[in-house]
Image 1: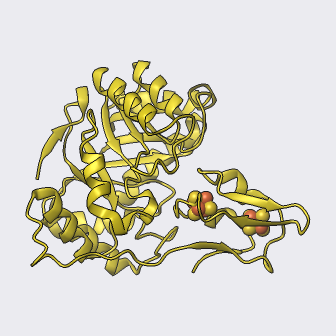
Image 2: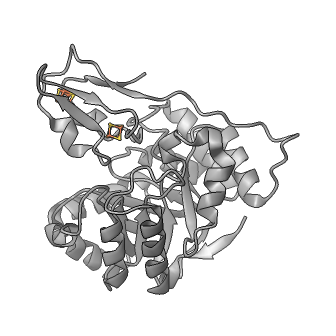
Length: 318
Ligand code: SF4
Ligand code: SF4
């Protein structure tokens, strides 16, 4: 599999990155042992890059797989913490729960926040700088759905890594279109930033158009790696074969998308709107007449971020 260097960080990663969101409680909520097997398979098959987050709650299977395989991949995590103390807690939590002495990459988990993110989270950025100076994180950056944020990150010295959303449907991109995001990626590349891509399958919505979607992402100039969420050893094998150029339609079993849709059960919804505030793609709308929230399936990225925001457990996968 192709190995690239994440810009000026010097960190080497495989072109394929294991996305650890879908196996965890926000999405498929797989048993721990099944999650461990997915991570183990990825490591044994040569994937050297794992993307996770404080919010994903998938540190435990990663820790276990590191132990059982003896393989230490590059790990990226991220936090929505707005201030110094919150980010410090997030980094310490990652160190402890992953049982590692350093985390390679730590990001501001910013999904839908606009360019105000850099001021609003100045304390969190300071914390990341301090931990980087101590060698406890090797690189810092931001995950974003917003073209303007990606563009601004290219101009900031403190941002080593950018993790933007892009896919051939343009789903989830804020403040611009596919071409705008491609240009922002090139700006980051030219500025020496490490760039890896998220949601190239649009949260699973493009899984049945896998090859065209992945080829689209691989052809984007300036990107070093692509995070793809995987939920079974078969999916890992398929992705590794595809990225290694060993995909053989006659031999490699096809991976079909598992059915995943988020729905708000209106009988449980109390109309508090908490879910609306966290949805990265503004996919949750509000029925003012009945005072209930509902999900617009055409906009939903199936990320699961809304699920823990609902104290009424009204948001479920179906
Ligand atoms: S957070 Fe839950 S209760 Fe509140 S509006 Fe959303 S679905 Fe309804
Ligand atoms: S409604 Fe929004 S937060 Fe919930 S799964 Fe869809 S995109 Fe994610």
